[in-house]
Structure formats: C-alpha cells, structure tokens
Amino acid sequence: MDVVVVKTDSAGGQQWLTSFGNKPFYEYGNGVCTTADGGYVVAGITKSMINPTENDRRIYDNDIYVVKLDHDGSMVWEKTIAEGGLGWANGICMTPDGDFAIVGHTESAVNGSLDALLMVLEGRSGSTEE
Image (tube, rainbow, N blue to C red; front, side, top):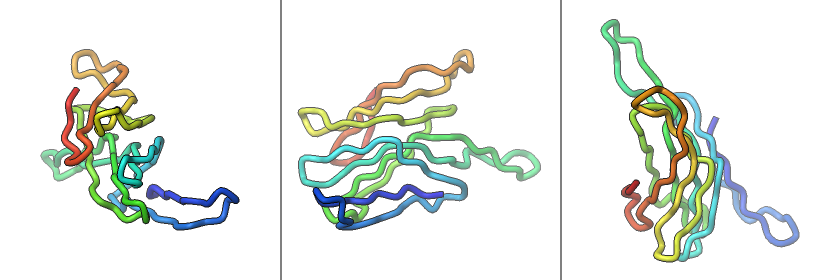
C-alpha cells in the first residue's frame, strides 16, 4: 500500500497522478498542503524496520513519513522520522517562514502512552525541530 496523490482541475478532471512509498509494508498519506514554490508536501505514516533481533527476526514500527513533491507531482525529497516508538503524522501546513508544521501523535518513551505531537520540519532540507 503506497500513498497516491491526484491533482485535479476546478472541474474535477485529472491533471496528474503519482504514487510513492514502496517500503516493505505500507505508507499512508494523512495530510497535504501546497508549498510556496507551487509544489506539495504530504505527511502520514510508514511502517519501518527498526532493528533485527537475536534470531534475525525483524521489528517494525509506524514512523512519520513526509514527502515533498514539485508542481508536476515528482518527488523532490522524502523523510522518515523515527521518534523512538510509534509515530503518526495526521496533518501538515506551511508556516509563514516556509517551514512545515506537522501534527500527530507519538508513543511516549517514558510510559508507553500516546502523546500529542507538534513538530517543525525545515522547508528546504527536511530537517526537524521539536
């Protein structure tokens, strides 16, 4: 299961369609916003391998997944953000200074509960600040 983004005109006619992800399990796109350069940024979830165990069994977690697309739907960059537990991005918007605010939830490293998440992702390079 991969993320699919479709751009339509004002009448609902398809202008382009793109999909991305192709990880071992799945990616979901939960939020999208336009960017100052006429592109788009999509935020959601990916299931990622975090490490092998003693018997070479694999451990997987949900992580935050963000993809920057240009105006034609071509991928500019993608980023997987592992927060040391489960993480989900539920929405994204562009800030006035060109960065991206991501909202979602994450598993607390302290007590295993789910906590609200607000993260700022640098618009140009995709680096994070919390």
